Length: 390
Image (cartoon, rainbow, N blue to C red; front, top):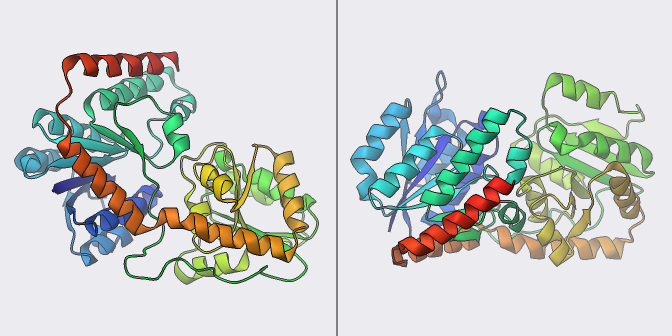
């Protein structure tokens, strides 16, 4: 079983997809799938210096990095028939559209991990009517031509058009291929006499950081650690909400050991996003035995609720304040229970479980008979009605 994974860029400046991509490739390769990668170089930057490129190469995975779309197209035209499955990450970039089209023309199976791009929420956030119509057409393209859509959460699946073969496989978060199962970074609260809440990620209006800061300012016995950065003007607006009491710490962008130190210093990780198809920061907290506070519109909310590994709230400042005050009055025994439940939830995010699910899906794809024209027409018509209605 030979698989070509396609991503527009491994540049860490593009956000989370490169790290999710490299983790997924490594996890699936360990499950006996033969995988190669195709990506585009970033002009003016050395791809060999990108962390996720180094990770892939270190695991013996071939990465074909092309200087532009033309080079990628030539590679696909020459080599697409070497692969059984073409699996693209992200939907809007031309390289993904091209790869899916060529897979269909050459009789290869295709899969897409959309990273939120197929959701109705994505189009609701699009203000331009022209761009919205273009996105609608691209969604129709994937629904029609792709053999499988792989969502990272049930939330993302619910908020996307119906597809004849849609599955949910959570992103891989911790590498249990070369290390022990997840363990808590500590037992009990991080510090005596106060509860430490933490936010980890980029500063963006959709993350509702103003709600988090407001709740921390108003909740007694609370301290807030903000790790990340974003648009300068927006960050200035957020800093203006700091009451100067010293209970809010602006940690900045953290990696490596500083990132691990952040998790050791917080009791809860908070995601108050208006929409987030997965919620990587919350998942990273759970695999370290740190409970999470998330809104219902964060992908891992279903897992948090099911396992009792944190608190799921409605969106809004008042709901977040209530959650903060509840946490500040927690008994140590109850917090210890939340920590145990967090590690129980973390079992869903291991490389081994992701790799097994992904490799099994590829095998299912290759065993599927070609759908007849009538069933294809029914599924496409149903999806088209959904897309038009949104």
